[in-house]
Image (cartoon, rainbow, N blue to C red; front, side, top):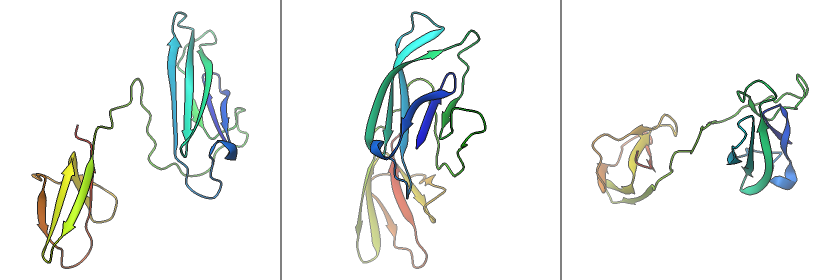
Length: 163
């Protein structure tokens, strides 16, 4: 199971196989908390949403200051009690946004191969990599962009939303 705890480290949301958890492979988790009532700054009311592998779970709750501050941790994967069933594993590409997450914008890509050229038509910013990692913007690329086919090795392309 995945335990999401906020504010006082209690189990705010517990997600398991019924909520989309894949016990044998990678999981994709997005969690958000939208404040609906901030009339009492010591007790912010809101709606939480967890999207785990496409399955959405919602819950209403409160972020409380417990007499000190709202400077609390946000935990994924650990038991709410200290040093009990701590998460042990890898987290790939974590991201935390305070406030509104950045816009994903639009990005698309299509490739057409001829005998000697690769024509890449894209929306957004064209990126390339020789290893499917370490993506870099292709400087000076304008859609449609043409390159000579490489004679050896591999080259990968993707489009990301423009800034």
